[in-house]
Length: 244
View: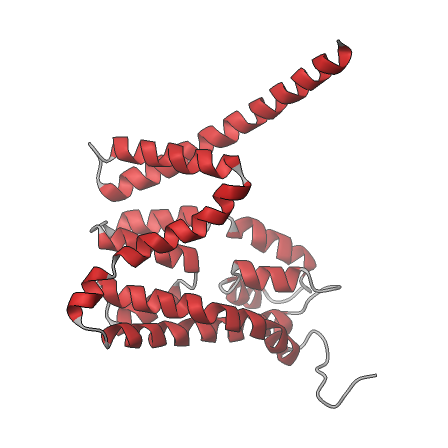
């Protein structure tokens, strides 16, 4: 039985309701981004503009690390494209579940298709309307942008010497994000080590940004090429052991 506070399903209001957990989850990540953006040297306007126009946590953190080492705009744009290329698959998947609507509406809400927004909308039972997707997107987006400003404000209140000493936190954050995957998947560890070795080599004769891009691409291609061969060899060895 519905209560007076229940929301009709597949509406803007129900999307906002289902997006609230995402908004709460974005709070610490966005505050951290705003704080690191300030300590990296971005102004409040620049930090907010990045969250407003990019709205991609991993890509924004990556951009900060590249900015910190003086990487050019072209390298940052290309790296962002690589980091977010998975969104092509996410958009195609959600398009199959979404109710048909005007292409401009779909283009608008596809901007807000983060990993978390995709998870909520794609796992909802039945088809989803544009209004519902917009609801999940809007509340998540506002949380990310507003808390970016909060984090930047917090960072600006710290003494300048402390701000400069805290730039290491950006690299510590990447290690913290990578560590859980390293424990679970050897493939991720191999990818990280191989990419680090390639980047160290390429940085001897390439600009820092391009060495990161090239190392990421080559390491990903190599690991994805070697993994099926390894799996196939393991299956072959297993069949031989059973036959003997």
